[in-house]
Length: 262
Ligand code: IPD
Ligand code: CA
Ligand code: CA
Image (tube, rainbow, N blue to C red; front, side, top):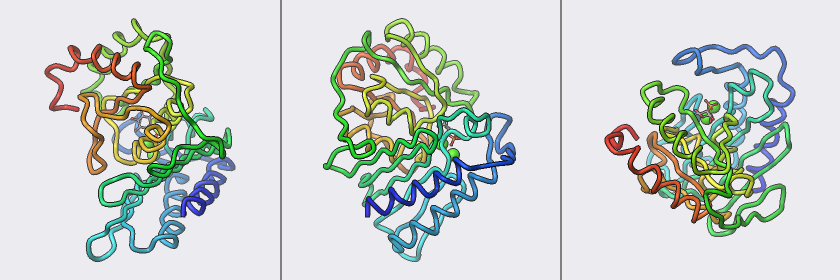
């Protein structure tokens, strides 16, 4: 099944890579965009994944589907993670497909059609980039790049995001903001960055990436150290074990009083 899902992600990626006349529309505000391609890719994923596992429920950023009865399996997909990059021609966006089984992530596939990097993981069986096994090296914060997400659709979190940014900038090697949470997880899995954090993400932003990072040896949690839920929004802290622990303890005083919002 993993192979079939990888092929579907690549087909979906072709729609993104060859897109022309992209027409963005605003969803909740000027930062939150959707294009005809988000919808087209969503439709392709929904049809193709339903053929792979008809009994699965389907949660996507641009639509959901529930079969009759209780579904033990659920696809959680983001048709384009990094829509703003896609609209601006910044080649850092991806298709993200996670498969949840009884509340646990079982499979994760993330594909960036511009770099043709295909990340995949199966629970307990490791994470891969284009067939190469990923195993991150432990390292401390000072020797780590930090991927950062600014929770752009939630202005109520800007103050907290910036205070965490100030803390991490003072202690990490440097900070990067690339605009796709799913790929941020992959860059940690790949060892390109030591840590990643964001104050609020949706299930489709984190489903596949969290498994890929975990299977490569990263610690994955919320900013308050809880395991990630896949049925609601949450914060995210990911990293090589030492850097993750240093980041979380540095963040702790900044988070006091914000717990309810995370
Ligand atoms: C967004 C991207 C971005 C992150 C936002 C996400 P979208 O997803 O992952 O990096 O900062 O929080 O919502 O809207 O492009 O699918
Ligand atoms: Ca997203
Ligand atoms: Ca999206």
